[in-house]
Every structure is written in C-alpha cells, then in structure tokens.
Amino acid sequence: MDRTLTNFIRSLRMAEVRVSTAETLDAMNTVELVGYRDREFLKHSLSLVLPKTIDEKETFDTCFDQFFRFEDVSGERGAADSEQEHEGEESGEESGEGGEAGEGGNGDRQPQQASGGKKKSKSKKPNNNLYEEEEEEDLGAGEMTEAGSALGQLLMRNSMVDLSMEMAKAGEEVGVREIQIFTQKGLYTRRIMDAMGLAELNGEIGNLRQDSRIPARRLGQELKRRRDFLREQVRDYVERQFLLNADVSGKKLREELLRKVKLSNVEHRNFRLIQEIVYKMAKKLTTMHSRRKKVYKKGLLNVPRTLRHNMAYDGAIFDLHWKSVKIDRPKVFAICDVSGSVANYARFMLMFLYSLDEVMPKVRSFAFSSDLAEVTDLFQRDKIEDAIAKVLRDYSGGSTDYGQAFLDFKNHCLDDVDNRTTIIILGDARNNYGDPHADVLKEMYDRSKRVIWLNPESRLSWNTGDSEMRRYQAYSHQVEECNCLMHLERVVGNLLRQVTQ
Image 1: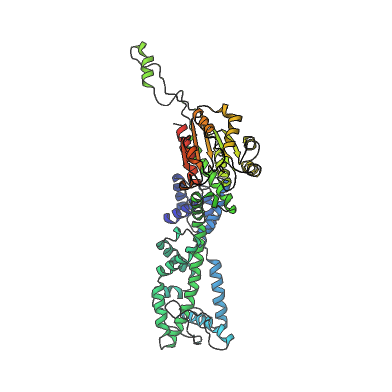
Image 2: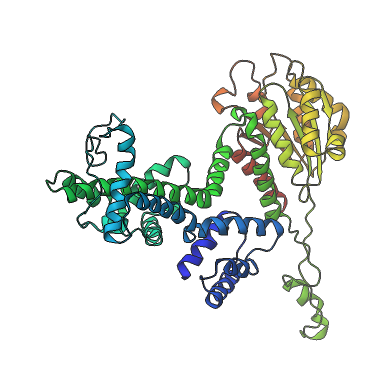
C-alpha cells in the first residue's frame, strides 16, 4: 500500500507538484483511514493534503486519473466481455470451461466464414516463436486442453483485474517508471511481456500447434489470439506510464539538451522553451544570491569590538556588538553585438540579465552592429520579449564595427563607469578589418571593476580572419567562450558570487 502511494507521489513530483516529507506522511495517514476501495473518495481525500495551488490541483487531478487508471478496468473489461458475449451468443455455449472454448472457436471462425474457409496471414515475416504465420485451419468450436504455462493460464481465466495486476507487477520489475522517451515504448513493452512469461507462452503455442490432437491445436490458436490481445494491453499500459512519468522528465531532458546546444542552432519553435529555461535559471541564481549580509541586532558576534567597548565594566559583557556587512549591488553595463548570428546570443543574454532584477537592478543595456545605442528605456517600458524584439529589429542592420561602438560608448557614458561597474561585452570581435580602437577598451578596463568579454565563437576561431580578439583580450579581466545557456549561467553565477562575497 505504501509503495503504491510513494510511486504516486513520485509521479506528482515529476509533474512539478511540490510534495514535502511531512505532506507524504499526511498522505499515508489519509490512505490508512480511507483505503483504496472508493476511488473518488480517495482522490478527494488526497487532494486535501497534497496539492496547494490551483495549478497544482489541476495537475493532481490529471496525475491521479492516469496513475490509478489501471485499477478502473471496467471500460476495457466491458469491451472484452461484450465481444465474448457476442461470440457466446453465436456459438450458443455458456460460460465456464466449455464457454471459453466456444469463444475461442468462434473468435477464429467468424472471419473464416466470411472468407470462405481458411485464413491466411497478410504478413511476410518469417516463422519463429514470435510469429506463427502459417495457414490456420478452421478447427471450429469445441473442447480445448488446459494451458500449461503460467501466462497461458492467466490469459484463459478471462480476468482483466488479474491481468492488470500482473502487468503492473511486471512493470515494476522492469522499471517501466524510468521510461524517458517515447521511442522506448516498444522496448518496455517487450520487457514486460518477457517478465510475464512470454518465452514460455511462445514455446507452448509452438508445441500446441504441432500437436496431432485437435483440442490442443484449438488451444494454440486461442492462446495466440489472446497473446496478441495482451501485447496491445501492455503497449497501452506502457504508453500510459510514459505520459504519467516521462512527460515531464522528457521535458527536462529537452531542457537539458537545450542548455548545452549552441544558441545559434536553436530552432525558432524552441524559443519559448528556451525562455522558460532562462527564467528558471535566473530564478535559481536570484535565490542563491539575493540574501544581503546586512545585520544589525543579530548575526555573528563581533568579539574584538565587544571586548573593547566593555573594558570600562571590568570585563563584564553589557553591550554586544554584531558584525554588520553591507554589500553594494553591482552596476552592470551590457554591450551586445546584435548583428547576424550573434543576435540569438544577445537575445538570451539580455533576457537573462533582466530576469535578475532582484539581484542586479541597475542593468544598462547597449546594442550595436555599427553605431551603438542605449536601449535601457525599452526594457523599462516594455515587456522583456517585446523589448528584445524591437532591439533586434532596429539595431541589427549595418556592418559590424566594434571600434565605432566603443567610441560611441566613450562619448555617451564612460563618465558613469566607476569601480562598482561591471561591463559585459557579448560579441565575436569580428571588426571587418576596421580600426578596433582598443585604446577605448583600455580606458573602460582602467575605470571599471571588471570587464567580461563573452565570445560565442569557439576559441580556435578567435584570432582568425578579421577577429580582433587578441587585442581586446588584453584589456578584459575575464574572457569566456559563451555559446549556450550553460555557459551563460556559469558566467553570470560567478559574477553574482563575486559581488555578494
């Protein structure tokens, strides 16, 4: 019972529903009180202790319906029973041992009557233990022998409840909850079938179909039909487990891949997911670095200062003094090359920086391809996505000229740069063989606390062709290859760590 509940809570967590250890214990106590017999009562009871927000309650409802779907087999069972009842009406036989035989005979005989005798397989697959594709003779309805294999006996019992329980048990054995991608559906289907005893069943079917006794061959045909039905049921079960356990983990896998892929190779249809990843990364960094060490009446005791101020009391401690540390938030100047393929890197770096407004509220942004312009007002006035779209639309034209961009920066705001300023330059340093004006970058280097250059190109390409990276690198405190979100997260995380120490 506890294992079923913990697996369900694991599915909730995979679906990004926050469930704490205390809430898990509450859920166990709830299940102990209400049990699993009444499905709707159980769902309502667990919904009171597990989900908290409206979104989480919606996710909980979906997860509950999917997770406990195998317990509700009435629909599938009803379909199977109605088919069997229809076959039983035609054969005129009752349920029981003879009824199962009648169902098996008519189950194969009905299409044979329509085709006028024998039924041939349309498949061209070779004959082996998995596919018995030879011609099937019309054995008609009648007596069948007893199934010898465990899976065969299970299939002949006509119990969807027992079948579902064995399916779930085999799924736990093969770890079906670890499925991550949709293409693994066939792999886990075969593993579950093997765990349920497919090899033994295939061997039995092969032996029965070569038996000289008609009841034995009739059983072989019926087991083959029910084995095919079981394969469909297992495939559906694996697909439900994929939707339940791997939908979010598959998303996480895509997110992990998108964090590592070059931003210039990201397709436009993935931009929305990239934006979600950026916001998550920014929120994580904000949580890590938003605590400012500014303490007045609590914190670390300043022992030297306390002793010094209490010397007048003959060493008796009357006045306590605490360590108080104030850390100024940095001023960040972001200078982005928005021309050509560099535009995608600039898009997500600006999005990243402006998502950190709680930690770095003083971000001033500049965009250029030839002439440099400040675009800070756009981000203050519009939404981040709209502001970035306007920047890329209005400033991405023209031939790239880093020298002119640095001159424009000097004329507009070099006086605002001080020892609290961090300048982040994003660009490939390809200047189209123009004057690089490295002397201006040197002035920025001397005035600022830190100059960080992020180059989206590989290091092997930095000093080839019209790249001025060798000159610019001399006047940068930190130079990094940055062409994916993982690189960007590391650089910004290091920046925040340095300014909050």
